[in-house]
Image: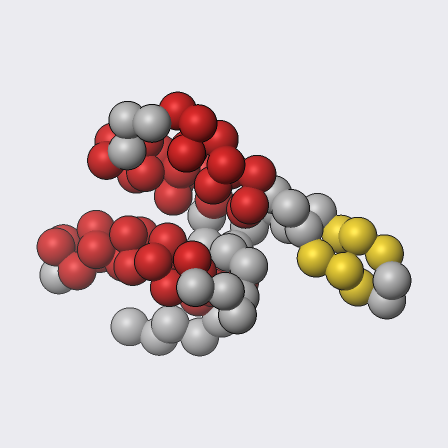
Length: 75
């Protein structure tokens, strides 16, 4: 399986659904949702991110591993 650009293509809705099954704290889920939708700066303008996880943060690998865990179990 090719994981090229995995972090940038991650489906945020599927990820939040998986998180909701594991995490019961609604405030934490809301905070993670805001983190995912925070967007990025491109050429001085804020661009909303509708897919993927923000890179270069400690939370990105954790969120990605939650998504990859499902695929690992299927394989």
